[in-house]
Length: 614
Image 1 (tube, one colour):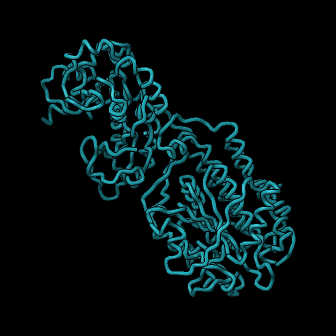
Image 2 (cartoon, helix red, strand yellow):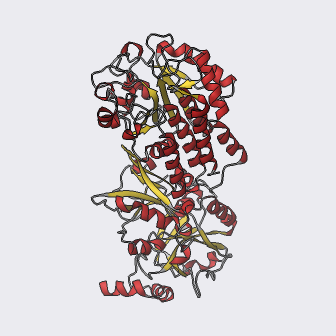
Image 3 (cartoon, rainbow, N blue to C red):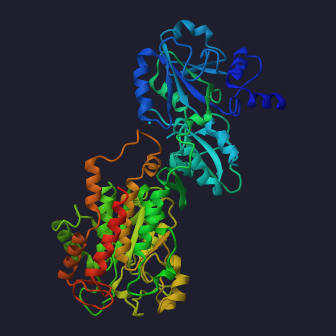
């Protein structure tokens, strides 16, 4: 009855265990019962498997946070509960033989002989933070579902619908509960985890999403059941789903801290994709660092008025998306000097190389696509950049002419199959962007379409392919991707109504000089690589979280833009006849601003802010 349920929710843990032992009150699920007490998943294995399973738990603390390991034949668990008896203290148990579920029983007393040689593992349970979520005003509805590999096995996840406006609160509360699975390992489309149908969970009952809800997924202790089924022991037991062991520990004990978390331990969530729906997570401290980078790259010494195009957190969200990516396509090249050969300018290529260098260091696949007429020159520039140490490894260079209606689809996807994209993120930096009339204009309003290949088509096609995100970096609004802010360009920029790029990217990063946007992106990716909260989320909570090795750290740091590398890169461009954008000067300047002190000082500012996160 409802009245009995209310009584059970407020009774002590020991009283609830006593009631469960009687097996006469129809308790079928412990969620919400003995409120305030920590609950545990249970796995019972033969002692010969115990060391391997414990190592498996330590290697995967998100799904399998180990609270206690018993001695062989030990029914109790003194650190967790007084006078406990694991043979009867769960409402229901699963019995496995050779990895197959053969029965569900309410008591293990009949197996007491076999249990003498078996070890009980008590694993943290997310039921332990549900009361805190309810107190914070978050409706708690959950179901265990899907799978993400002692033995290798799939990871089981629990889905909870969360109102989007409460995502930060939920992530912050659960992040502080490492002994109850910690924060979510994915927020967004279940298909990203390989879950095709939320209405058919493998454990528990389906949970429906309400209006405004976002599906959030936590690692689940039912992973222990998968481990049992995977390694196929002759005999094993687990709790039945939802039928946990209730400990005497206050659920506050699962929280890493009861005080206000430090910025390094306070996660924030950000939407990084709508198709598929995908959110990412980073610490408050890291978010502030990247916002500081965004402010630095937004300096406007050329007084172009680019602040009118600024959208907060575009750098952050773009880099979060890039961090989740595995293969990135970069494009650059703005042939503004149409009377010179080559017509390219010095803004764009240095920033593209800086982004590529850091992506390479982070083990991403990277390629650059550019105009066919400039391919040979760019190959020579790339070779020189490698020789001079600007970038460690040459980036493959591609061209795209768009010879048929489906050329872009076949360029972006294997065999033109939108379910098999070659790239998951496209980045345009200081790349000529198509205006609403189909032409390409420099800032003076001169049409340079005859010098530009239709790389814009890749971005418009990418917008129709789930799983490919796009970023545009610009400093005037006529660059590819800046169509996202085209209304501001038309209103605030000189010749804006004519030159504004009409092709929008998912993220539009505005910088005083586009190269600076590339430098800022490289630094932001480096900062994210050092954020434990983001890295745990990026790896879906699997594996033991480790700081980067010294070699990794050195490789990442060495990839960052520096005054010496960027001066060398600019020198290479000048040697190949590439000129400054604003003045046409063949010398050490970009957009009419000399490398020293303007560009060198800004690079130092970026590096100084980045080094504070080491």
